[in-house]
Image (cartoon, chains in turn blue, brown):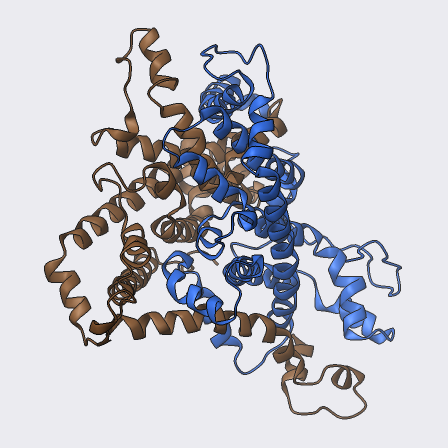
Length: 299
Length: 311
């Protein structure tokens, strides 16, 4: 995925904005028209609702067991140590990272190929294929557990992360492909054609002309796939039986369903589960808005 | 456009290097991986669900296995109060969740679309629960709701309510408690999608409206809302399907309890197949769920005249 090299090989404009979304710099009204309190008061109330639960879990994770203080002081990391080693969250973490990254790569590559075909070609089964993509949105993975289990048992993939990776990818694919084909349609075909005239193959033209322009969209789609695979629970619960193969959500669930719930351990496990997605989220937040507004929903 | 048509036609004259570079097989090759994955892991399972819905199939009672005709469906509709209970609860859950998420999501999107100091941080913070999983949401709210050290204890300290209240194990409070937990995570989804769509409202419209002296409320009603309509229709539909099918949160937060009070149809199906091993009956229930979803979606799209409005 080298997106860096983009020598101006064609006289075509080097940069064409993928998103036509006007940047919100020029607010549509002069700023003093909406009274400030009408923004800050509701926003603050909503922020409290959002942040108190986060604070709560942080509090439980950092204060000693049995304490009921409302500030995490004296601070302790005993819950983290316990969860990471005794409750095997170290192993779960590795499995989740592996599953998330494999799903991200697989989904993006397969959806990119399919999305390109949908955006740039007319072919016989195109309409039927588009319809199948849309219909698959209504097919719930949760309801297909039994047949999926049978298929993976047949393929001897039960208890291997491969089964979870495939299942997550398959259910991420339709939406990803629809989104990506929308992004590609926003890139004028004339750009690619100019590169062909200059002697590039279709693939090279795609790689050096189209791919760099797809970056915001691909980041949105890829991070979606990662977060989804990281968070999803049911497939891992059903297809993986060895404890050494489990992922983080399954580990969290077993902490919760224990007879007497160790709240400190649960909180620490929750923080471990949250950190990667929060980092991904902070990184992609601005891409997410542009990625979606690039004609995704309206496409 | 032009090149797409050229590709579709039978072999172009040899002069056209474009045609030689892109054989007609190319689009099929490009969609092949996706198509194969979806055939194998979506289409085939769906077909097998339909097949099993007409069978008695229970690996723990193999002597009863065999063709059952429509027995499973008849049983569901005439003889299984749990089916109706869980279906009703699913409907209630979806309507309440999607309605409230849309309402708060829209309000939130309109607020953070304004220009104000701290907007970037504000957006990042209010959107952040979006990325949190259903299981983690449960974990967080289990901590908040637990009777010993949860929020009720501190409320009781302040004289509100009584000590030892557990909202998740009381049949009268479990529904609102679960709704709030899922709202916490669901509102940002709508806020993000609506905010994205707000970026493409033409500013000229507002300026024109301003010149005409339209109030902010009028501008919202006549400009913003019509612009957002398709996005709202599509995102409510996707979300409704998703909320209907999603089992992570309720499975881990309440386990469908107390006393089956919060069991959705998919949770009931999961219990029927995984715990009771009654695959045939579970497949029939799954088929019913498909049909209901499909029917409701079509009716919804028709009623909302999706895509028919502007342009």
